[in-house]
Amino acid sequence: MNESESKLDQLLEEAQKLRDELAVKASLGVAEAKDELEELDEKMEHLKAKSLQIADVAGDTAEQLKIAASMGIKADSKEDLEAALDLAGEEIKKGYERIKKLF
Image (cartoon, rainbow, N blue to C red; front, side, top):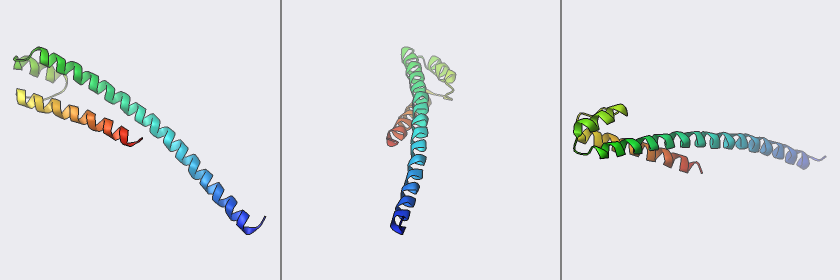
């Protein structure tokens, strides 16, 4: 085996190691993205359900704030509640955008 074949073998071995590392990372990344997607889906469904409850009691700010409190949202007014819901929606949207960038 001459020197150029030895260098090529070494390059191919290094390339294979890198490829194997990337394959593992890609596999883990897909699993991580799947987990995050499932978590975001749950959050979105919860937000949808609670926002529908809030809409059903439109005009009854006290009841809306009570529902918000059950979601862990601290709000003292309807405006605070709307801002909190918008923020929660933005957080979910950004999570989906983060996952999209992985692909």
